[in-house]
Image 1 (cartoon, rainbow, N blue to C red):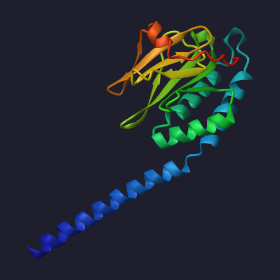
Image 2 (image 1 turned 120 degrees about the horizontal axis):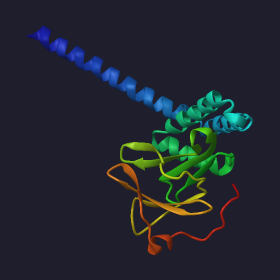
Image 3 (image 1 turned 60 degrees about the horizontal axis):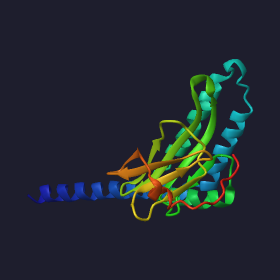
Amino acid sequence: MKSVTINILSIAIVLSMISSSCDFSKKSKENDFNASNTLDELEVLLTQLNQLDTIDCRNMDQIVSINESMRRIVENIRSAEKFDKLVKAYKTHRPNVKFAISEDGTFGVFSWRTKMDCLGNQIKNIALYKTDNGVLTSSLYGTPMIYHRVSSNPMKKGNYLLHSNSTIKGYSISNGYLEETSIDLKDASFADNQPFEDE
């Protein structure tokens, strides 16, 4: 009986050590995240992308590869801490990759020109939004646009308006999922009339 008790205690100690090690590893990764470096990586990739010739659909393999690298970088932002660091860095960094952020700091959209016109994909939009389970990412479908601003409706929690130069789109978060919604004049009235940045 004594031997069984010792074995159970040993197993409990080992499991506790493994759990602590996992927690430490997770915290270490969070601390190692450098938001400025992440934005620099996106900037370098976008510069490489813009230097490629697309006449007669040239360099498509390389163009697709660069876009995939950019997508993976953005989709690696999976925690609120990383998201907050990225928001703070972007405000001082201002790279050519657009990152529109809501006033409440819970929702953001990356936008860039993909140069994949031959494949029917001119612009990439990836939304990042905070949930109780961390930060989720979602590619935005429909007509892609360069978004300059995101406004949140104080009367409707989880509802956001995405502003491009030509239109406003509504999105809502429900049960952790992002979906496009219709907007009305009352929704649009919550958006201020600050001038848009040039693309």
